[in-house]
Length: 284
Ligand code: F3S
Image (cartoon, rainbow, N blue to C red):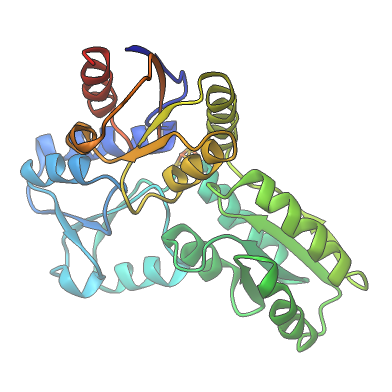
């Protein structure tokens, strides 16, 4: 089978930086904790855990005075304070693009109601909301806009500042933005589309490849939101989309009458996984 690998498939620079730094750290230090999975990819997490990293779900699980990694998604302001209270050494690997959103919402929260377009349960969104403070609301879909407006009305702020989760779907954001502007017509609405260009460009390439090649394998963790988004984007153009976590998942799929296939991969998929899938498909 002819295999075309997307140029933008795999680690974005934020994830790459976090994994590289964690690796370097683990070469020199023992007993390093990571708050949450460092990336939404089982294989990458396992590799680092084999080098001694301990993944925990809360700071309470970490002994006082230890070293803790904050991953690329970032954390809420309160988590930094809590870490300080426990005398933890924080290795802050929050992606620069997420940090920039934290700074923007902090700057605007004094005179604006903050709307965060993103998935409510996503760690990055929880972190941004933490910096945005009380006068903020997360909008996951158009259905949330009325509730957001009711919350906004309780404040006496005349301005609304809109940001987005970095890995949110660009087209969905545009639809939501339009409805925000209609529903908040009495307010001064400032929109800052903070979707990361690494995400937007990867979605663009996925769209292009799905359109041209019609068959696509999308590699990424089951809980990776940017990978799920790539699957959705590809499905707009073809039904022949195969989401997999590793090459092993491919072994159950029958590829009948397919002579050419494209590979895309989410921002937390390592190049080894992409290479394994490529080699496997080329042999079919
Ligand atoms: Fe950063 Fe964009 Fe990746 S925000 S973590 S470079 S998807």
